[in-house]
Image 1 (cartoon, rainbow, N blue to C red):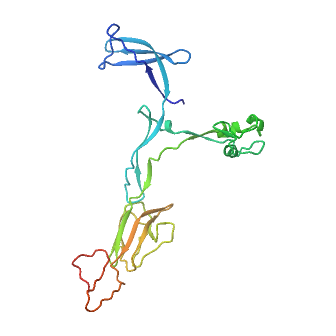
Image 2: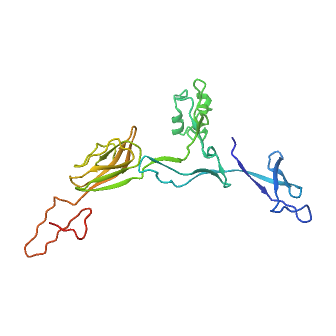
Image 3: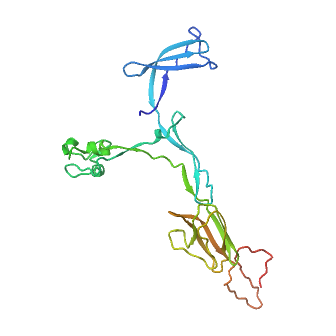
Length: 301
C-alpha cells in the first residue's frame, strides 16, 4: 500500500469581508480536496460551513509530501516478580504529523533472494554479486563489466530477477518490531553470615535453585559447606541452612525445563574464625575484626 501523505495548502485562502463570510473557529466545517491538472499539483478546496450553510471554493497549489515514520518506545515497566517475571513497555509508530499509525507502517519490508541457491551461468551467487559490487541498489554496480544481467541467465533466472541487491528477489515480510514484552528478573542479593541460618525468598517460576562459583549458570553447581539448596521451588521462603565453611560469593541460578535464569547472588560472610594476631608485652595491641552483624558493644573473648 502507498504510504499516507500529508497535504499542505499553499497559500491558504479565505474570504474577507468583501466576499462571502469568513470562517470562524466556533463553527463546524468540512474540508474536501479534488485533484485538478495532469500532475495533481493543483486542487480545488471545498469548505462547507454547516452553521450558516456556507460553501466556498478556491483553487490552490497542492504539494503532496510523503510522511516519514519512526518508532517511539517507552520505559520498561520494571519486573513484576523476583525472577522469571515479565515487564512491558509501550511501542508506538508515529508519523511526522504527530499521529499514531498501525505498527505495520513503521515495519520496513525486507527482501529475500529467490530462488534459494541461485547461481548464474558463470556460477556467481547473489552474495558474490553484492560483495563484489557487481550490483548495487537494484542496478549494475561499479565493478560490473558485462552486458545485461539476462546475458548470464541460468535456467531462466538472472541476478536481476533473483538477487535483492540487483533489483530482484521477493518480499520476505515485515520487520523488525521493537520488543514490547520480555522475561525479566528483579535480582536479589542474600548475605549469609557464618553459623547463622540463611533464608532465600523465591517469587518466580518453579524450578531448581543452585549456586555456581562465578557468574555463569552453565558452570558446575557449587554447594558451600553447611548449605542445602531447595529443589523444585515454587513461590515462598526457603531456609538454605547454616554456612560453616569459608566466606565467598556465589551466583544463584534457577533451572527450569528449558533455560537457566540468574536469580541473584549469595555471599557467605564473616566473622572470620581462622585469623591470628601477635601482641607484644608492654605495647598497645590492636586487633582488626571483619564480619557481618557486629555491634560496637560486642566483646571478644
